[in-house]
Length: 138
Image (cartoon, rainbow, N blue to C red; front, side):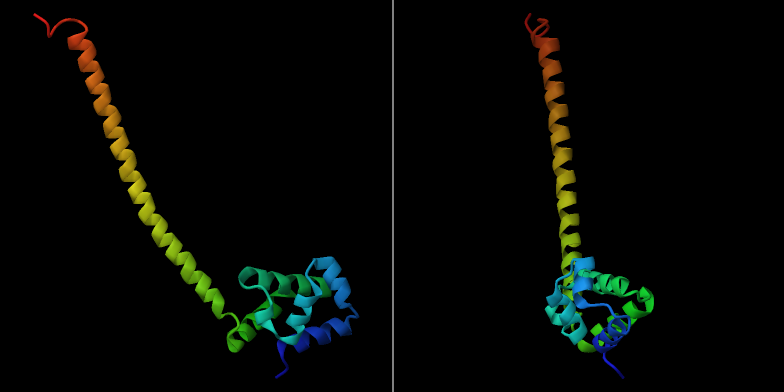
């Protein structure tokens, strides 16, 4: 079975599209495009950026996106280069968990502020009603 990067290069050359043209059109550096064709996925930025580079490449060469992206993801899984994406998933999950704890603390804090404002209002009313109107003084 031919490597994914070799298939990309073969299709690019068959369509007579230069790497410089792809780089100019997509604004992706030649270094990243060369790494993609060489199968050096660890040299590419991770996550959505990596997939974005592949999508831009495919569009510039004129290849149908869906089947090529599926093959790219399968190649990533086989090579193990996509493993840091799971680290990002775990990181995002930890952030979500931690933020939900912050929200509940914030809600409790606002309930305390509301209670304090209410008590100050009642105290102010009591001072106004009884002390200033002389009802406490005989």
